[in-house]
Length: 529
Image (cartoon, rainbow, N blue to C red; front, side, top):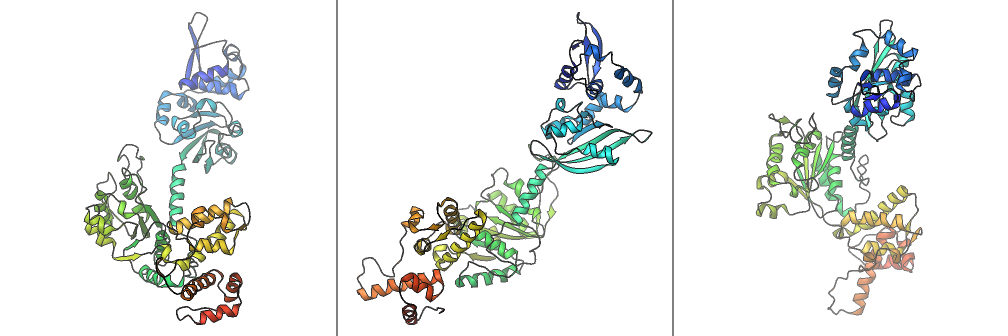
């Protein structure tokens, strides 16, 4: 209840706090003498009388004129009715209503939930004021009033959420706009999911140049591997990639996808080990509305369905729970799946590439992985060796990631010959992922542009520079030992510098010396420049 000495602002606060359409007014004896509606308060605000007392307000000519203009059965009575409030509050989407002049008349509870803006902050205020307050980026209602037609646009709210607003005018008999009714739909989650899918589709290492079919950092020894990958890509068969963590399984899966007939379709990557056990089925196969507590009312597509006509990359497949392996096997057998909570199966057209750093054969023996799924996944097994077994790639990887991070962080970092030697000699137990992280760490933390060996991480500085071809306790002629180390040094210099001239300069000898020694090696080819 209110007294006549309270202001319009206090009345507005009382109505919006209690979510009322009207409130009673009492005298000094607490006897009800009348009431004020939210519509009347809106009229007071529109006329600039927010701080006016109710006693003064009821004596204003503009109020009397307003009441005379209202006809029984008109829109205002409908808007102010409890039935109308109950109807719009039952909607999942937000509802925002202004009058023909742009003043806010009504919002529903869904609008408050989506925007985080309580009705008391907007009801009675003009949309220009709502814009100035920063609640919305741009009013669609004002545009509708100006253009006299239905409009739809995306808005960004003060809480960072993005919404689609569809606003329609309600015309009177003389074609004047009486109200503008806006439907407000939260699309923040949809945008996030789309970005995730786009990121998954584009989650390819920059090192694969699909257009020219060139793999920049891979050494000649890996060409046969990618020749096989291209051949397999053209066949719609399931591939299982094995190898230690960080060796490039995702890049290889992406390479196969982009050399297949599905290259213009989605490439969906799923890390089976990263998904929560209680959600993996819903994330993988999707669900129908109301399938479980917290489920979206309209349901959700799973990764399997997102990959329709494209490639589904199942990384860390060895971590998939046994109960879900049965459903995956059905997808591989007849390309059907059933979303969580659904009663009918769906058909899907996908190509599956799996990857793991575990030994699936051992998991099968332990009963942790289905034998039938193992054979179904490993139609074409492809093992990717660790980086320590691909030493010729290391200098190229260093160069590639150094260029990449110099460009990304706007730096011009360079490694000295000694620093390059240390980096190239390190065994990289974390493989390409570790190498990439180390290079970026050096680029962003280095106080100078020229990196010396002593500036490298301690674990790399402590790594042995050379691995001899004889045992530590083996005694061989000094001349033979010298030849072994000399050959390793020249090979390393050639890997880093590519030409005999540059290698000779780094080793402090003449180019003719390098050429003469290399000519004596039957197992090493070189280019003389």
